[in-house]
Every structure is written in structure tokens, then in C-alpha cells.
Image 1 (cartoon, rainbow, N blue to C red):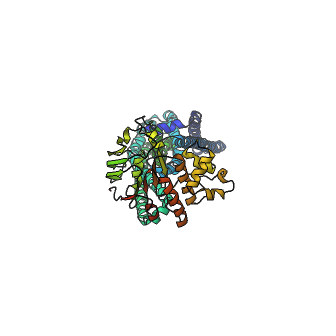
Image 2 (image 1 turned 90 degrees about the vertical axis):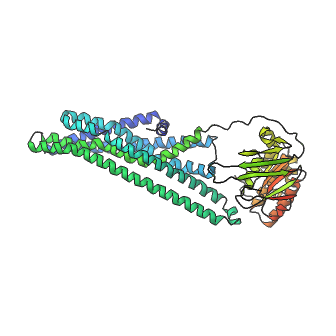
Image 3 (image 1 turned 120 degrees about the vertical axis):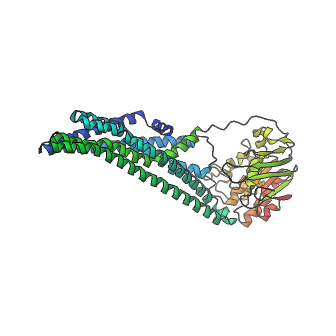
Length: 533
């Protein structure tokens, strides 16, 4: 058993595992009793054992139902614990929100077959064969010896094929994880993709990912069918090694019919749990692959607090210089930024333009200290950004993203995120500067109006103006704007550009923009293409 499977087993309550083991042993005892009663009824031509035989069959059915119930409840509890741990974990989000959603939903749902199928069958495989052998040895030691010797062949062959299945299923899950994450992110940004004519390209990308996942699934199924063939063949040959000598001895009169019938009835039952275990293993392979990734996310080290470094004098707009900055994301074919050199003078407003995927947002992340360059450096008033106190630097930044997040709180509290200690008057001043006071006054309770999660109830332009108000309230000397006018109508864009002009006045600013109105608020326009200036 691999480490990830052992860890999954530890998620089950000990009481549940113990109860499943007892139920498996009970099924084994009833199986042997059922075989005895069947042989007595057939060989002795007696009707007396038939009611007891029916009771044994009914008992096995009840125990099978109890196994399903206990395993299902234990699986639900284990999955709930995993989901809660993943939601609490401060793990690396490099895979994106879409990939995490795929893991939390489809990924953890795929763990069900492990808990409800593989684990009960594993316990049955540990309990039933010894009970069958314990009855076979007194009946016919020669047949029992053949069964004991051939039984280990089933897990050996199953493991040989299972290792290949695990590798293929891991690849299949990885492709599904990538497909789900990419598809979710494409849906989230569909409006922007259509605006820039990139929807067709992303459709082709999703189609290619879906094709890769389909081919990986077919390969995994092919190996699963091969595994079933191998296990069936091994079990059939093993049963034949017992059945042929028993048949010959029955013909020669050297074995009692009742004994021979008992051996022939019990021998296949010794192999059945191991053969079914191989099938359950293949059914649970995808869930084990998903669990491996979930455990990797849980085991990821917590982010290390940024060390306190030098502090650049606050209160004035700094000079920002990029010298040969190169950024590479893991798994990407090319660099997001390649040798970018740029100087932004104190108080200068520089607009960065370029096609989608040119590296504009990455440039802002580098300036915010959220992404470290692979080579090159960023200087703030002549001091390397890597040597600065990151918290102090970010406290000087004003950030206006393309899709600002608003919380289920009052309008005033959402603006006050820029400065949690700001009073009501400063909040109103920031709203007036951001051209937001007019629509705030039209809300049912004005600044006390509680918004829905994500700013539900406000238009895109109104949400952007609240983000501008936050930046005003923060009062940082450096402003980073990431396409704040995207997806806005002309009236909202005009109001936002006027507010942005007031926000950027006297500050060092870098703004990502496509539309001419926002470009007009800049002193200089720099174009990025393929990660290069």
C-alpha cells in the first residue's frame, strides 16, 4: 500500500475501520456456512438445510448493506474533513482558482470509491481467504495447499498491472485538473477575451486539453481492462488446478462427493475477494491521484513572513527603475517578461499597452513585490526592491485591479479598506474624489448600504469607482492600475478617467490600459509585446 493510501486510511475513524473489519469477518463466516448448507442439501438430497441456507444468504445481504452504510458515512466524514482542511490551508495557489475548485469538487468526489469500495474490499480480502482455507484444510489438505500456494499470485499480478494503472490515472487526473482550472478561468474572463478577440484561441486551447484528457482516459481504461483479463485468467487457472484433480479423484472414487462438492464451491470464493479488490483499485485510482494532490497542497509550507528590510523615505513620489527584469512562470514555454528595462520618474504617469498575454499584469505584480524576477532588479529611489521592507512598500501602494473585490459589508467599510482607521469624513472625501458620491447617495441607506458579496447590486463602473476611492483613502505615493476601464460603457469610463486623473496627480503611477481615454491620462505610453518593451 502506498503512502497516500495509508494516509487516506488514517482519515477514517478507527471505530469505522474496526466495524468494517468485523462485518467482513461476519460475511466470511456466513459464506462458509452457506457453502456447508448448500453441500448438505445437494449431496444429501435433504430439504432441512434450505431454510438455514436462505437465512445465511439473507444475513450476507444485511451485512453487505451495513458495510455500504458504514463506509458511506465514513467517506462523507473524511471528505468533509479534507475539504475543510483545504479551505483553511494557506497553500500555494499557483494552480489558479479554477484548479482549486476542480480539486474541491470533482477531485474529492472521486475519493468516494476508495472509501466505499476499495477499503471494505481490502478488509474482505484479508478476512475471507483465511476463513475459506481454514475450512478447506480439514476437508482436503491437498486442495487447500494448492489454493494457499496460488492465492499470492493474484495480488502479485494485480500489483504489476496496478503500478501502470496508477501512473496513467495520475496523468489523467492531472489533465482533468488542468482542463477544469483553465476552463473556469476562461469563463471568468470571457468578457475580456471577447473584447480583445481572443475567445476563439481559448476555445481551441480548451478543445485541445479536452482531447488530451479523453485520450488519457482511454489509455487508463485500456490498462484497466487488461488488468481484469489478467486477474480473471490467473484465478481461472488457479481454480482449474484444484478442480481437475478433485474431478479425477471423484471419478476414481477416492473422494466423497460431499467433500468434492464443498471444495469446488469454496475454492472460487477464496479468489473472489482478491479479484474484486483489483477492480476496486482501478475504480479508486482517480480519487487516489486527487488525494495525492490534496495532501501536497496541505503539506505545502506556509508562506514565510517577508523579512523586514530597508525603508525608503515616505511622503514623496519615488523614482522606479527596472533593469533587465525577466520573469518565468513554472511550466510556461516562454518568459512572461524578458529583459524589461524601464524608468518611471518621480511623479510620472506611465501607461503600459500591448496585446493580451504580453506581460502587462505581470509587470504590475513585480512592482507590487508579489512576483520576484528570475533575473534583473527593480530599484525604488536607487534601492533594490528585494532589500526593502515589503510591508512598508506595499503600504505605499495604491492598487486598482481590473476586477476589484467588494465584500458583503457597507459601502463605507468597503472604501475604508484603504485605511481602516479613516473617519467618515475622509471616506466621503475619497468617494467625492472618485466620482462615487452621486451613486452612493442614491443607494437605500447611502454609505451604510450593505452590498452583496462581490458587489452584487452595483454596476461594473460603480465597483471600479469604489476601488478608486479605496486608493484615494490609502493615499500611497505609488499607484498601480490594471485596466480599470475594461468592460465599462462610455459614460462610466468618462467618470472613471476623470477620477483616475485626480488620483494620479502628484504620484508615481504605472497603469495598464488599452482604451484611448485612459491612455490620455498618462504622461508617456510604453508598449509591451511578447514580454519585451
